[in-house]
Image 1 (cartoon, one colour):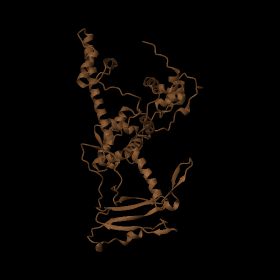
Image 2: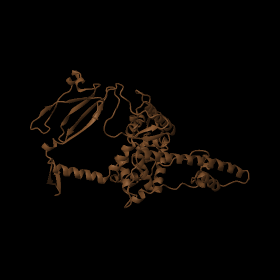
Image 3: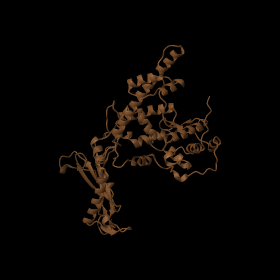
Image 4: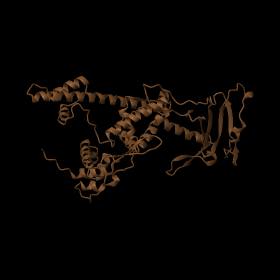
Amino acid sequence: MPKKRPIPKRVQVASSIKVSNPNLTMTQAMRATGQYSEHECKDRALQMAVRRHCKDITLAERPPTFIAHPTGTVASSLTPPSISQSSTTDNLSWNKSTSINTSAFNPSESHETRKKIRNSKLPPGAKEIRKTSSQTQQHRVNTKKRNNVKTKALKEATLLYKAERAKMQKGEKYKGAGKIAEAVNENYKTSISGRTIMRYVENGMAGQSPLKMGPDGGVPRDVFKLLLTAFKTFVQIKQINGETNCNTTNLLSQRINKTMNNISTTSRLLQRLLRESAIDFKATVSDLVKEQRIRWTTFNNLNCWFDDWEENLVKLGFGMRVPGDNGVLKVHVPDNQKARILNLDETAITLDGSKSRRGGRPSMSFVDGGLPAIGLAASKTSQSTTMITGSNALGEVIPPHFQFSTNAKSEDRERIRLETVKYLKGIRGKFGYDNDQIFPCTLGLNEKGGMD
């Protein structure tokens, strides 16, 4: 058996940093050693060498323990394995006095920040393509289908090669792994190599699914399978109950992390579940709203809007141009003018807890295409009230206006209970006056209780 090559010192240092700080990326861990160049930190082969040694270090650690946390709902929690600093360094033969460049990485750097940095490195003239939520989900579906085809092809190829090896041992005529790979790739439109087929058969993995690439996700396979089943069931139940507003990305990510005892504070675990369940779900939101938002929120449009806003502030007398710190003129709005700039919006008020919405844009949610789209929960009282409020630029609250629904067909027959007015308090503010005033709340009535 060939002798195992000695592990380079810088690989040992990078592996120790990665094991001790699991939230770091492999690039950050290698950069922290100060022994890799920026180009080497991004080299996939060098990263894989560090990743393999990290796996060797953690093999001796104890397996994860499962702790049941009885709450209002039955849930299982996962406690990640604790990594002992002393045991990690004892297994390594590197100099403890080696200096670590801690300024080379930022542990608090989020996945979204790294993604923005990666997307910003585009060649000159290239434009970043922003996908809608439906396009992103469709990409997950395509990837999952390709992986399923590759899995089926590899299983068939390894079983065929195993049968051919049995013929070889009997001295009969047989096909090599290369010939089998060509036939299977032609049938499934894949690119499996003969060497891969040989390796799987030699390791006793004929007929098994391909190994996952990359580092371990931190969740055992059986636990992840149960979590995936629970995730699918939760989304489907919420859809049947008409509570698709609970199936948004933010709420699902928070619920999953809490279920798994907060082993992650990001949406990475949710992204894994979405990849595995991509074929079962689709992302839906108003196509018109999505298209309008994506097409309008460009740099030119936003820049034009704020430039026009400054011009209108000066032209209408709300502000004036004054020299800034660097000598460039900027728009200054005094406090007495800020009280005249208002920002208001409307919202729906229901008595039964249903989340009817008015104004704004709907959030993206995941639904099962095989189940009926129930939509949002409707108000069981058949009554809906609209409230309009906001504030001015000075921070003063605008007196709210309530629009109630009524069945009256004329203004003479409109009625409202006096108890309602009892709890409507006044709002103190200036709103353009010289002194503070008390402004009362206002009321209105129409058929639907809205502002249409």
